[in-house]
Amino acid sequence: MSEVPTVFLIDDDQAVRDAIGLLLQASGLAVETFANAADFLEAGVIQRPGCLLLDVRMPGLSGLDLQKQLRAQGHRVPIIFMTGHGDVPMAIRAMKAGAFDFIEKPFQGQTLLARIREALTLDQRERRRQACRDDAAARMALLSPREREVLERVAEGQYNKVIAAELGISLSTVEIHRKRVMEKLKADSLSDLIRLLALLNEGD
Image 1 (cartoon, one colour):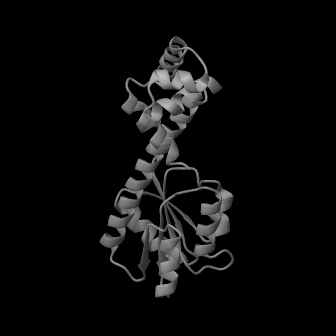
Image 2: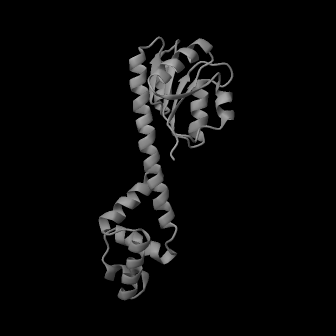
Image 3: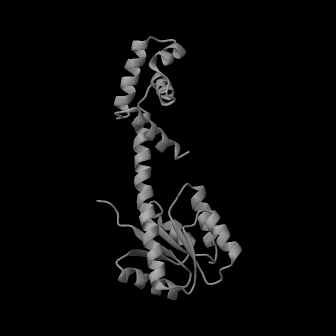
């Protein structure tokens, strides 16, 4: 059973956590609250599906510092920043670093809910895409070095006889390798191969 997408609310203001937490729960959203970034990191929930609703200014690790740390570790969870002291440079820094949105307090509840739902949808879509990339990578790992060489040339649009000449093998051997490549990658056509390679390159 898949995990329920959760809004991870991180704000050092108890009143803000209570108010936003109630709003999210009343709207049918799962929410977990944290008083600071350190508590969030210690909880070990970053791998779970969801999004972060994150205060910018907090004691200790700031919201922007947490964003930087998560990105450095390869996490791509959507982050919606909140602040009561917002300024343009701070907003630009957050957005350039990949923030999903930047909202100034006080904000309209419905506006916040709409952006949170969009962030959760994005996270779900990206997780599905990452699962597809992981599956494609696992299939690629099944190929032998020679099969990879054939695949690279097939993807470039080379004919079998050209591949045979370049690799110094017979045409029938190329055909055998090509057939195995298609089977291992579960591809029915050249376009399937191209799409699979493009999907893998997205992660580079």
